[in-house]
Amino acid sequence: MLPINDPDVVAEIRALHEEYEKALVQNDVDTLTRFFWDSPLALRFGVRESLYGAKEIEEFRKARSPLGLDRKTFNVQIITFGVDCAVVTLEFLRQQHHGRQSQVWRKFPEGWKIASAHVSFVYETYSEQAAALIDVPMENAEAVAQNVQRAAMIAAPLLEFPITDQNEAAPRFEP
Image (spheres, rainbow, N blue to C red):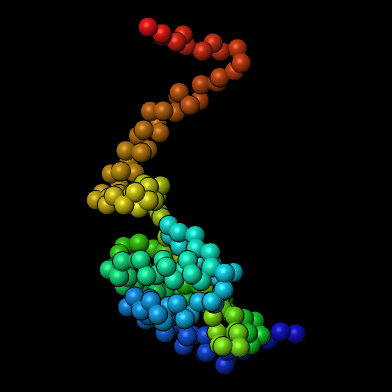
């Protein structure tokens, strides 16, 4: 049976993860690149990007702005399977955004590498998500949410009106 959460392996992964986190907030691209598996099979799904292969991941890191990378991590969970496979998950806060991250680590002859990673934000409301997607700061999320609710109430009777094949389409005006 495969040992799960061997304390020595968990400690090794925790130390590597802490080193990775430090490199991330310092935008140490060389170190971050070394952490990822150098393979076209490596992948990283980010907030706004889907990166396939080590080269795409490295290019993304090099082009990324070094500003605003500080974050507070919490709920860090490490699960190891045997002595050569681990999963690290966590939540983070960055610039008032709540996010989550997961990484699959695999031990290769050259050492531990991240084979797969995922980063996403968690939004409380549709309005917050929409604002983030178009990079528009939302000053008063509560007021925006109220306006969306009002618009939904106004539209409800129209959306509830049954439309069948028997309904005639409105006439079209052609000059």
